[in-house]
Length: 123
Image 1 (tube, rainbow, N blue to C red):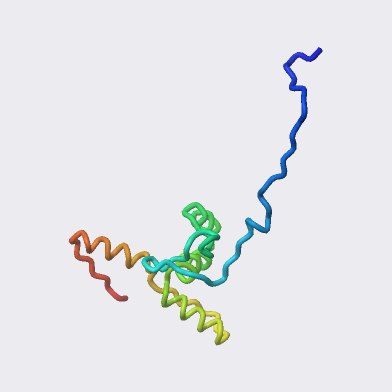
Image 2 (cartoon, rainbow, N blue to C red):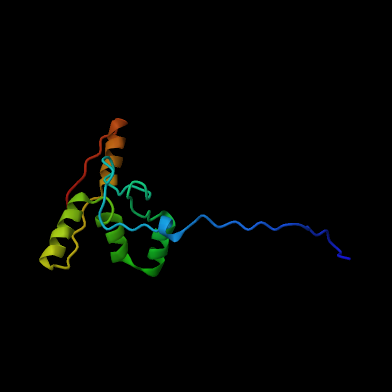
């Protein structure tokens, strides 16, 4: 006799439908959003992997400043920096000239649409 109730009968086994070939996704180049110029998200749109806020904190904790700069500008939404980086790679130059992210320009345009005048100064 068992102390707890026990199920007696046929145990059905089902195949797990999640296969690696369906889940795996990689991207080197691909489409970008027209507004923010950031890579699209998701496998269906051939998008990139999102580098979220907590991942940024993790790289900050490790002191990986150059990696952060590359991930948040050239590999994301810095259009001019992306083109310069591609040219540098083709020419064999290893410099990274990061510029202004397009998401910052979108933020400035949204603030200006509220009637607040913002002027950016060049250094």
